[in-house]
Image 1 (cartoon, rainbow, N blue to C red):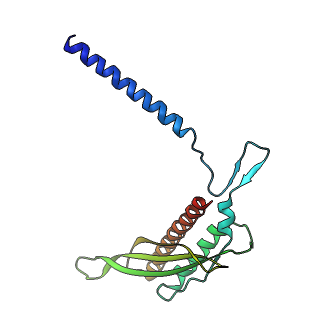
Image 2 (cartoon, rainbow, N blue to C red):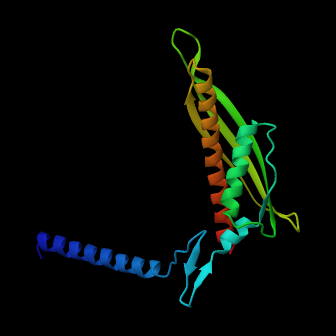
Image 3 (cartoon, rainbow, N blue to C red):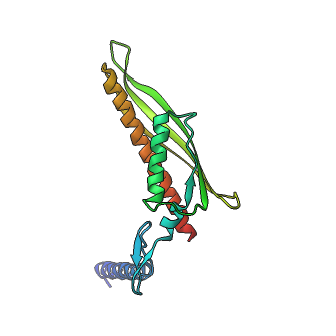
Length: 192
């Protein structure tokens, strides 16, 4: 046999191995199921099956978020966003879980005007720690930490600065609420 025929045989073997591994991966992955996290899914039977994750999220009682280490605006927006993401308009459901959140908001100057020695840009950071517990047993189910940052420009206009700060506070509170709600949904999805 020549060197050229050995190379062709090894290429054919590589193609066969790649084809076999692709077929095996397709067979294995065909058993996986994708389920909606929050919504309803259709089953083989008649009708739709609602997600247990949405019901578990709606059963979370949100403790009031203290503004001790954060300002009132950030705490209010975080509370409203979490309430909306957890209940999703489901109304009052019997509460089975308790969610406690501790929030810390820091504001730091990150840019200074060259000849004026005045800040020109700020970064606001929200650090959040949450604890989900069972109301009946007071057992801690899951904990976590999350943080988000947003920057905003500072100008010589007082009202523009207040609005820029408020917008940055809203952005970080919404992002933290999204992260906490997603982590809780993931916890409930893995549990069921």
